[in-house]
Image 1 (cartoon, rainbow, N blue to C red):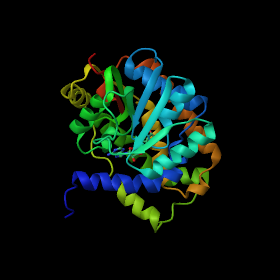
Image 2: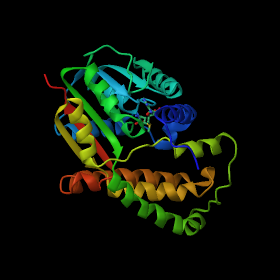
Image 3: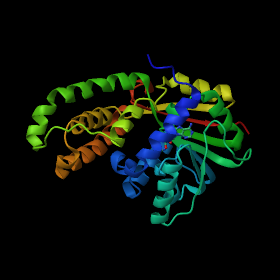
Image 4: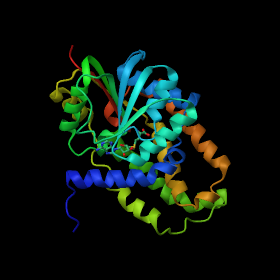
Length: 302
Ligand SMILES: C[S@@+](CC[C@H](N)C(=O)[O-])C[C@H]1O[C@@H](n2cnc3c(N)ncnc32)[C@H](O)[C@@H]1O
């Protein structure tokens, strides 16, 4: 039986996995720094806050990866200066390459979210996307977020997996695996061949980097017990998520180079369309807990 993961081993595996994933991360997840990406990131921050996004002077991103949130917010003018932190130096190198290509300046600091080498009360906004579920000790992390925010400053985290949403998403994945042979015949792709070497190692690590799925109350409790006020938890992506996971499950069964571009475009456009359906029709009416992604916003008391 494998030894239980310790906080140090979780950090170590996250660093190694994301260092290796850095080069292909943007292509794999469709990270976009054009109008689409900017619209998506602004939309998520607006949704988390429950109001229009103001301009923040100094922002700190936690687990910034290749810059999806910070670089899009800088481009949108919603953030004037950004410091991007991540435990993976490889991700931050890719972030700096993206920033250079976009003509943006950004400071990067390789650091664990639970021990930020940054001064107290330095930021107006602390934010992150898809990072809290990787952190072994969330109480320590939230205490750090509070410490580096100025009084009255804003906290925003988006893209955190919801426990119920994650369970529901297993159905479309299973259905996709069942119909995969017929789908491959339709798009004329052959079955994925087993890979060895670095790819195989990554696949092993992929299952070790995620350490939490959340109920909305879990996120609210961590924020409140750290001392945050005005805590707000919302949910997003239901139909878009089922569609996205089903397509990813199908694609994972085929040789990547043989998946037709027309299919990839259909999958991407369909996902964006269903995101709009979720946003306009479902997110306001249904409880956050059933959505796939959770968002939390809060304020450091003045
Ligand atoms: C799923 S990726 C998200 C990256 C980026 N925020 C995005 O949305 O594309 C998670 C990121 O969290 C980082 N991470 C994992 N554990 C961390 C920790 N303990 N402290 C800081 N960053 C961490 C990873 O290196 C990775 O870049």
